Amino acid sequence: MADKKGRVQQIIKKDISEIILYELKAPICQFASVTEAKMTSDYSYCTIYVSHIDPDKTDELVAFLNNRKGLIRSMLAKRLDIYKTPELTFIADHLFDKGQEMDKKIEEAINRPMRTLKDVYGEEEKPAPKKSTPKKKTATKKSTAEKTATTKKATAKKTAAKKKAVTKKVSE
Image 1 (cartoon, rainbow, N blue to C red):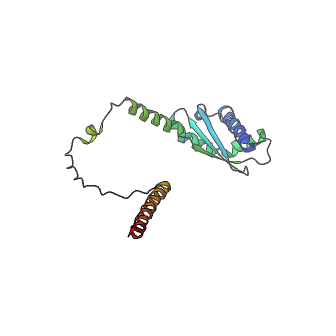
Image 2: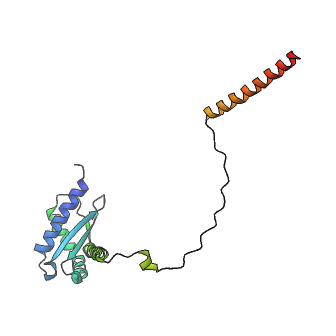
Image 3: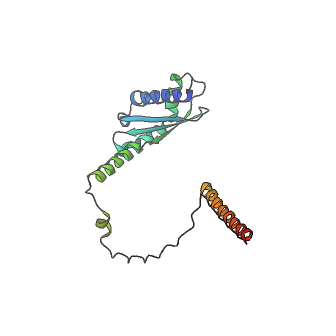
């Protein structure tokens, strides 16, 4: 019972495709296909995406089905075991055509000869190189151990200088 809405959409898609192909006896419906059914969460509206084997007849098929959507809905209600039969809306599905266009573009891109930037933009004058300025030395941060060692050396020098001064005074 995880995806009730998805299951109902699949059942509606299957039932509507059977109704279109077998119960509506119109020549336009012979090569029709239902590609997708989308329902609202309260099951009151359902959008049906249809296509035809001849892309030029898809719009004619959609107009035909939208004119007979009341009949299709009543036929669907007899097949379904749900409380409310949704209001149907038929829309032309052009995803197959868009997919074919994308495939053509990919094939063209793959089969096109390789081009470099020189081929695209040609050779232009190169800008003059920039003058390099001498870099200033920047102070680097010393680690704590280095700071401690430097402090100890300075303290040791001061202590040694004081001892020399004291020994000079004592010897005089």
